Length: 254
Image 1 (cartoon, helix red, strand yellow):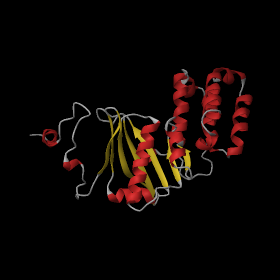
Image 2: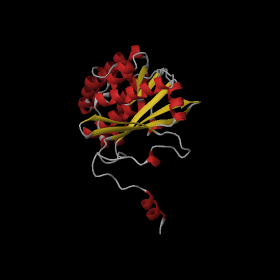
Image 3: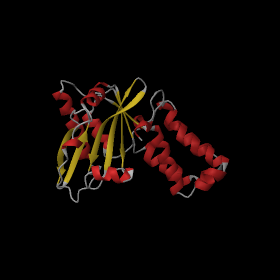
Image 4: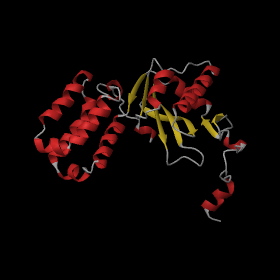
């Protein structure tokens, strides 16, 4: 038989409902250490699974910088995302915690972090990182603020720029961005505002909008309105401003 066929014979059949048992071999590491640390009900017919080995837990609980991100296309049936938590150590990112989450609700993130804090306490540890880097998910931002009140929370600079470019695409400006140097330059200046000192952010945005020529201002009117409404008035400036920070993205989680 082929390699894929041999693998399929060793892989359990995907469950047909949320009522499933996890084989013992999937609850431990290759060296026999506990790997499944949480298997709990989040809400009706919605479960959350958290995987991490003792060494990975030790690393994530003792790292000063934590990176977090969710992957949605990789999620198995009955789950919305695979949520990974990485520890930054020796300038390298180490994947430490893998959560299968049923949704993106604030209550689910709260339960995820509380479960990990409880595990830390059982190991005589306190999970209190100095910095956490994430994307700008609406339900995640207040959760981190409440669960890690003393931690510096920063949004990922890559996700900031990605959101702006997706808005450019949504507004039908992709061709102009590719072919018009003035349009492209203005859009990139918008993206670069996050790199400026915090006290220069607002004035730089308003100055950029005021000084572009009439044609560019007209074509980018909706983009300026979006940036003003969302980034200047919805998301806290301190969250997406990355001036002076060495670690600006959570791309290692991707």
